[in-house]
Amino acid sequence: MADYLRALVAALIGISFLFLLLLLRQRKKSRSYEKRLPPGEMGFPWIGETLDFYRALQKNTLFEDFIAPRIQTHGKTFKTRIMGSPTIVVNGAEANRFFLSNEFKLVVSSWPASAVQLMGVNSIMEKSGEQHRLVRSILTTCLGNTGLEALVPKICSVVKGHLDKNWGHCNQQDEKIISLYKTAKFLSFRVTCECLFEMGGEDEVLFECFEKVLEGVFSPVVHLPGTSFWRAKRARAVIEKVLLKLVREKRLKMMEEQTRSSSSLSLSLLSRLVGAMVRGEITEVEVVDNIVLLIFAAHDTSSFAIAMTFKMLSLNPHCYSLLLQEHNKIRSKKTKEGENLTMEDVTKMNYTWQVARESIRLFPPIFGSFRRAITDVNFDGFTIPKGWKVLWTAYGTHFSEEYFKDPMRFDPKRFEDPISPYVFVGFGGGPRVCAGYQLAKLNILIFVHLVVTRYDWSLVQPNETIVMDPLPFPSQGMPLKVSPKI
Image (cartoon, rainbow, N blue to C red):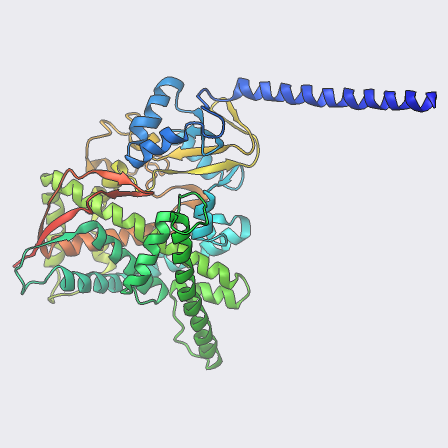
């Protein structure tokens, strides 16, 4: 019995000693992290600085009220706590290059649970490795030069049809006040639905469903009737039902055409996604989730960029005069009334694209995004522990004197010469750079051309406030006074 007790005591002492060693090692590791962590304030447990962050975000003053004061106090790399997660905020072109180019290697995309559920757990934003490359290759093939060239007349027809119906045409001289932001949003939605996914984009019920989903993207995941997330999930279910029907009908049609050896197979994005599904490369759920994500990505950011382009043209008449000259010159080359633009015409809109990019620089449609460290990351002399979030923002370069002289001044000529993709990050960068970047460019340039060459216009409220919920938008919808040109 005494031997048993001695063995038991020895075992307990051994276990206690081992536990003590592990505890000391963990404390040493924690102290080591503390020494190498960036400076900053973590705030209260869990809540951290979340309230300050979202208060600034809603007012569209995230840089002025949250980021800039902390850069001044702690430097361009600082720590905080947002929504319960310890977070490192990074700023500058080198930070953008490091974290955006090391996607999948050191960090992975990290979205709120609400966004993942509503956009789709099987969409490209949640994929990595081979599955991410597969879907991205489908997108880039469809939205390459050949695919985009074929889209130009289609986009022109959609936009002209909507403007003639809702804004008036040359035979009608009535002056109207329309919501520029809502028009741009609905048109971008229609272009994406009709030109990429062979859907009837005039379905306002479906458009409103997408709007309801957007309202819940960054809301708390609460499955209670009346909450934003609950309403968004119900709207998402309606969208999913419509898209499942679309995908299944497309699959049957493609299989029938293959049986008949038809050579008229469509090269639309819908066809390419369904084709990958038929080959067993992706599932039906992945096709639906990616369509949902792409419609959101294509129509919401483009519409804000269009609205901000017109805002800055209104506030800078000299820039508008130069832009109008560019478009009148393109129009003067047309031999037929109402003739559509071509890709060659679009490539001549150099100054317009400078104006658009400068507007996006000052008013980025996406302020930045979160990443999650999948290993300990060494950056800027600090260690970011595995599991911590990293937040990069467009403001870190767009609003910095280091990269843009007098950064808050509107000057499209900044873009006459090439600018590093990690300095101007209006469309992201790295492996997750916006796949629809060139489509967004087409949407913006074609819309601007058809408005400035066909209508006299003026902003009703040039200094209208920009707010965020959850993405930026003009608080009054940007009312525009328009009348057809004679």
